[in-house]
Amino acid sequence: DITAIPDLAHAGCRHARQAQNTSWEQINLVALGTGHLLAGSFDDAETALIRAARLALDDGNILQLGVALQALAALAAVLGDGQRAARLLGAGTTLAPFWPLMKHGLGPYLDLAREELGDDFDAGLELGRNLAPADAVTLALTAPSI
Image (tube, rainbow, N blue to C red; front, side, top):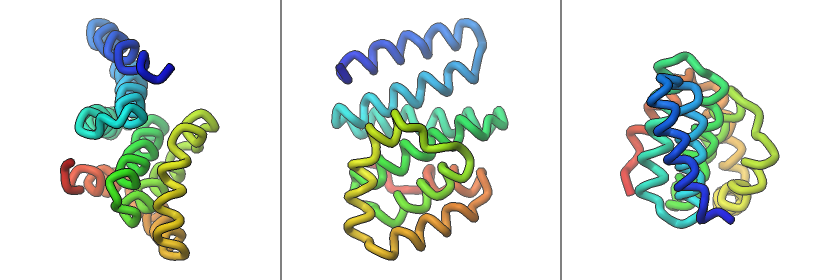
């Protein structure tokens, strides 16, 4: 039940902050953002996912940064920015594997961008694969807000 994800992730974030565990907070922020994305709350998804990406970059947590970028790619696809989605996905999957659970939940959104762009999607993936982590976060941060 995806409707429970935001409440559980909020609680996880709160506990992580109390424990001063930024890695755990990053994981919960990605869960929170993904839950909001799946529920159609795109503003809330963007807020949580960008916070996760910033924390991961600041901590040097490349694996979690990759996962956050993958979720931000799905958000970009939902918002109709297929080229940004492809670049963020390329960057994200270079930094972290696209886990089956994430692929299952986010894949349909990314498939829309792939269908829209055709071969240009693959070109965007390649551009994203060549981004430095900080540049990938900048791409996510400078994208138009919802």
